[in-house]
Length: 34
Image (cartoon, rainbow, N blue to C red; front, side, top):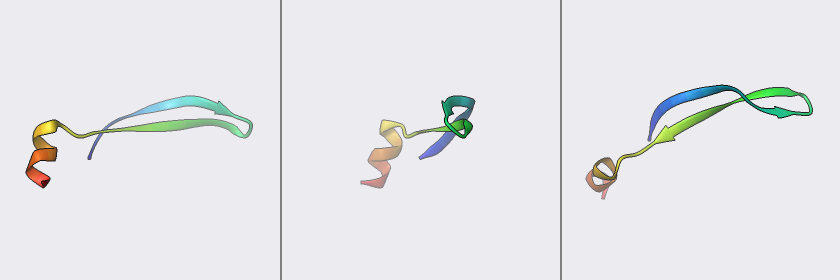
């Protein structure tokens, strides 16, 4: 997987905001692994 980006302060939890890291994998990359 490749880190595509980070969504800052994406979600509010009881202790405060957290970031979400977004990862992606292209079909062509997956086929190279198999």
